[in-house]
Image (cartoon, rainbow, N blue to C red):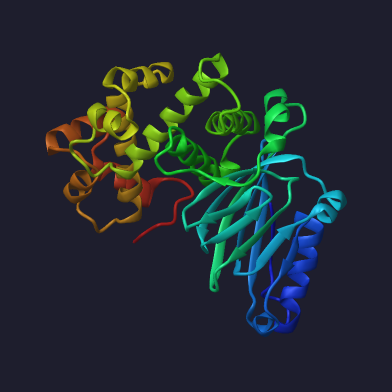
Length: 326
């Protein structure tokens, strides 16, 4: 992973260094900020390979950034870009018009088309995924015409692209290269679908949609473990698919939807048992969505071969390499 910040530089040097190193030589863009704000500028940047793609994260004082023909000729990247604007709303001017971006927006574009991005005063935080196009026939055929567009929240593929992108970004270096490339391929296919560049009936499109629905389902489960009514019907409603389709999503995994929910609840129970040793077991069980102590103890013993109390004691005191809490 490459990581860098302006913190070690003198205030009057920070933006100029950021503009030259981060902007001109790494990203191939032109940056600008009001002269009276340069002394207060701060920036932090990191990037890591994610399979064949590159994931970057930028946190900085808001500034203007553009990519013109000179920038493109100097440093071409020939990539599909997917960005998540976490903080720092603004707008992007393209040859096809102005695109407004609120905090939380996800946008897609081709890297080697001109744009001018302006952000409101304050701070900005963005995660950006660059997927190389070379060697990907469907991407090469269509994506080079993709000027910046944001995903409409209510569009057919918006939730699926968001869930897939956030899962990739959150997992980061934990993903093996082959696993990352598979997920990135599905994500690129979803972007093509969202842009109307390919049809929905191809095997590749159907597999990308299925994989994204499964990813979205797991994210919904992870965010709602506390709900005792969490189940197939909850997921079907959230994903806007049928109950039968939810069951079919989990079939290739070898675990049913119900077993997946239970397994994820138990993972959270294990985490809380280890990290909050003073918290009562009964409190943890109900906080993780178990509707009765009998159900909880039965599921935990089946998974661990021990009671929650014995498991906690082993993790805190008996496991090799674990710091003793006495």
